[in-house]
Image (cartoon, rainbow, N blue to C red; front, side):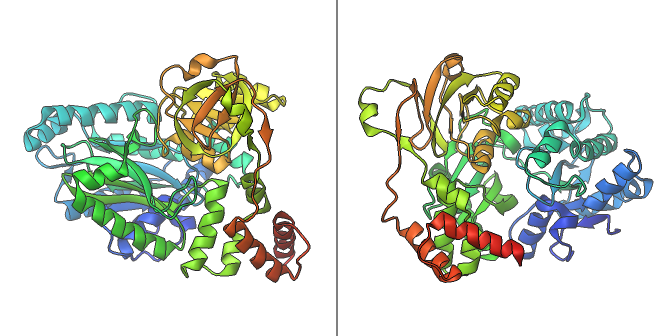
Length: 494
């Protein structure tokens, strides 16, 4: 294969800029001997060439697909488009810089009437085969924009083009613009053999954070769904189960997951966000990346990782900004006001903090009113990537469905927007009302409650960072945010 189509076998020697974050994480896990379904990638250079050629996939790239799919078949013992032991694949985007929820994915690609029948015959479970087909059709229609053709190879070509096109989708362009990211990088396209969390009652899908992304504790945190697949957990459309239940139901898979999590955190020298699937009791890891965290978690993890010898003092200070410290030191609800406060919704904390605003359910209206300086709380049944522009502007977010690894939760942690998810039916009925969102405790109150400054004295992690920053800057008469801003300017100046 050429440098444009690479097998991810742990030996490519290519960096994230070419492979994209998703494929780079697969490559890293394969090099560590972690169980990952086989995959290959069309590098970001393919995307850049696609746009230089006016939106055309070059013939030489497509000509390499049969050999690449044959390599997956050689590992799995399955054939793409085969009517006996069919190989299904996922087609996933992956930019060099993580863009959570921005890009597109198609799972279960390669299925048609013949393949669905073969899956039913092989497993003895026609419902599983039909469920797999249904998921594919729904995703293909959403991402590609049309009903899938019967020919698996044409499905593959159309999905690859759709993923390349997602680089210039409205939401992806807006995401990069808001974060000052270049439009020139392009997305890689990862094609990976499917494993099936929806196969049977010993199968499922989940997300694991190697440390708590909410409060910064060192304990692992995660959610999973029995007989789930793909984005079932992160979409927020289903209420996920606590990871402890996986330990109870499939202890071997859970133990292997914890071992892999420790290995990846040691290798990456950072807290990891891991996507995994269990297929009939067998664990597979699909992706790992540095976790998006709340301000408090980022601060506490930086101190923890240094104390454990994973990062230096300089690296710890690099991970903590003045804005993060000020966010951790932001106001909270006056305890006296809570005695008479009316609780109107309760859910799971997704990104800590407190915000007050008027509840709006329409994303366009929320974006417009927030842009005009109004304090807005966006309330949705569940969020999706098209909501991100509004989410980046509003004071807070609440959802009826979803857990702490849902789309709303992950995006709000990156944006540092207070968020409560999984509030149940009725959250969107608050439209037009002013509410106070206590995302630290997962509660929504009616009206605007008074706020008071937090008591942050004697916080050991902040004190440790302050000591390091004072030593680093040679100064002791400045606050921690001032010290961090001084250090950032010095680093920028070289």
